[in-house]
Amino acid sequence: MVMNNKLGITDAVELARTEEKISKKKAIELFESGRLDVLDAGKYISLSEIHNTLFGEIYDFVGKIREVNLAKGNFRFAPVMYLKAALDNIDTMPQSTYDEIIEKYVEMNVAHPFREGNGRSTRIWLDLMLKKELHQVVDWSKVDKDDYLLAMERSPIKDVEIKHLLKVALTNEVSDRSIFMKGIDTSYYYEGYTVFKAEEL
Image (cartoon, rainbow, N blue to C red; front, side, top):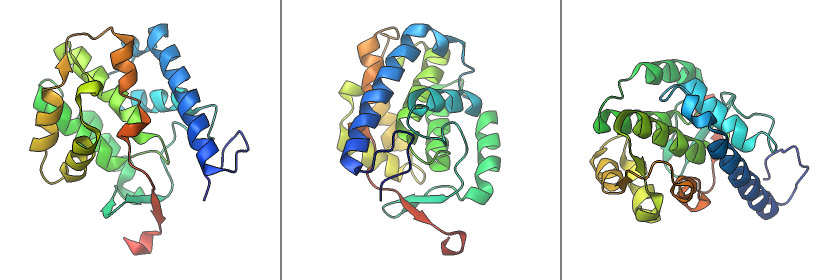
């Protein structure tokens, strides 16, 4: 099933290709505009603005909390009925240390607030926190895709793996556009959401 989009694309492969092209162009604009430097790091409202910027030309739901329950594989993200409370809680979580920042990132991944584009938006959001608090960002070229996806799947239960994986990939090159762009590489997100009803929770 192809997601409804502003571009009228009905082929899933074409939509994925177009989405990647547009979101990367918008990410470059976001990076070069300096807008990221004034966003409130670690807050949902900033994540919403990032999402809106990346995907606003493609979808109507950008920057808005999803209205459907989502799962990927065997993992179900936060149910819609608890999503607003989860986001309010994430906003108040501490982020002064590396461990606290990754814990906050893991919680936002569990929340998965948007219908599409969560991973790419949230990785930029993560780097904003790391840059503000630690003056570092993740060099995603040093993060193995499969290791990352497995670690993120397990992170709600045990976050040791994701903490280690990202820590060894930290860099002080916080102003390097090529490093920033690796974070929205589509190879770092899961394929195939499952949408399910509340009674299936």
